[in-house]
Length: 84
Image (cartoon, rainbow, N blue to C red):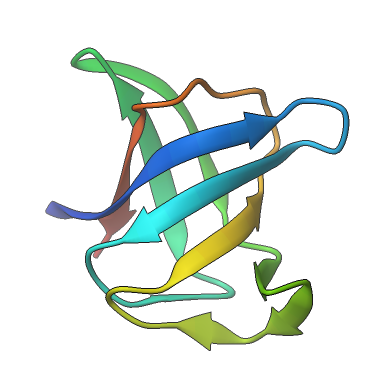
């Protein structure tokens, strides 16, 4: 199973558990992702919620800046990989 880079965390709001992500590839609700920082796997989750400009959307495309609800806290600079 290959993973490919879909984005990078630019900010994290710990009180609400939302990462701000700049996408380098498309991402959709239901996709399985893996978060990695410094070459170390942090955690894996299924995308449950994506927001653009505070509106829920089913998917986002390359170049979008999204809010991504995460199951665990994550730091800026973490890379997000989508599992195929």
